[in-house]
Length: 115
Image 1 (cartoon, rainbow, N blue to C red):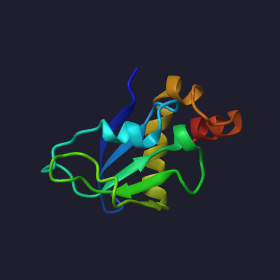
Image 2: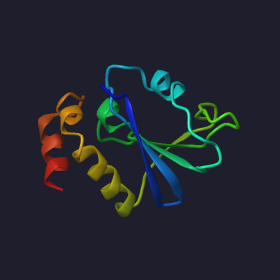
Image 3: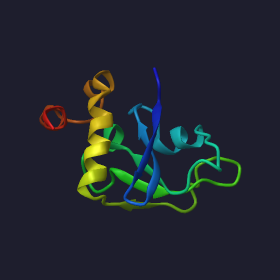
């Protein structure tokens, strides 16, 4: 099974969104395993909904290091606008297997599935 997805975002000032799919792996461990071309992206949005739930810790903003790894030394939890939220929810909604096997309660899974 995949542990993450990378999608182009081009909204809210973000170039890409990384959706973490593996709720059993520590977030930082998963992020350390990701490599992206540093020329392709600027600001990253990381969606941890399947690991941490629908709360203030869902979205992490960060950048890439020069070697293409995710900068874990400078990040912050952020709130996003409705357009970005809809895009993030759409990505998660398409991953129904992962959605059902996440930390989310049934009520939140239904909320994402209905939107």
